[in-house]
Image (cartoon, rainbow, N blue to C red; front, top):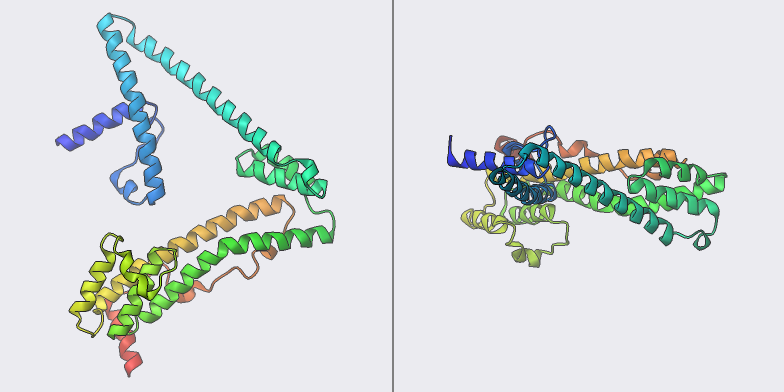
Length: 310
């Protein structure tokens, strides 16, 4: 057994002492870690490190009990019981503060109608995870007249449009990336590089500002080197195919996130008595041309260019 493997097993043991890793699937494999997003990975590491700290304290307590001849198992169980009680108290206090905050920041006198008040309280309660309580308020806030329904739909259309716009922007950019990949000229390759960097970063990238994106782990530098090697003839078919496939993964993840978001909101809108199809009307994209679920090969690129030139 390698030292690294042994070290990992020891770290996992300490994490379990700290309460992390007892549940099935809680400790992730390397493959599972590689598939996490940056935010998910950071959250996982923070939880595990916090558990390691708690685990080291527990390990020290057990060693102290062992040297003193005390009941190691019994005292460990006592500490676990105390920790569970303390954790439950903290959760209850957090819950109390969250509920208090919701009702303090949303006073009935601040709303034009009782229905608007109930609807807002219900929505915030459900967003915080208090589903049962939220449903009761949401029921009171359901539209009572056609005018109520129309008003709610228009309001929520504006809310969802703000969420949709960055998604549409990313998908449109990938469509433009596909178009740029069909050119084998130096100018076309430069446009492809611009579109790819935009796909990596949601901020606005002007052509003159591309050089500032060298912090993308060398992405810009590597692409620029490839472009210079081509001496004006453009990226190779292999490089263009690689860029297309990486860009497609980013666009597909964006689309999947939007789809999951819509599914969740559909449930909320149904509870609120609002027709989800009307809220999301027009917030859609024809993804058939984006080739989600496929892989572009260098031969695909060459065939496209051949047909264009023919």
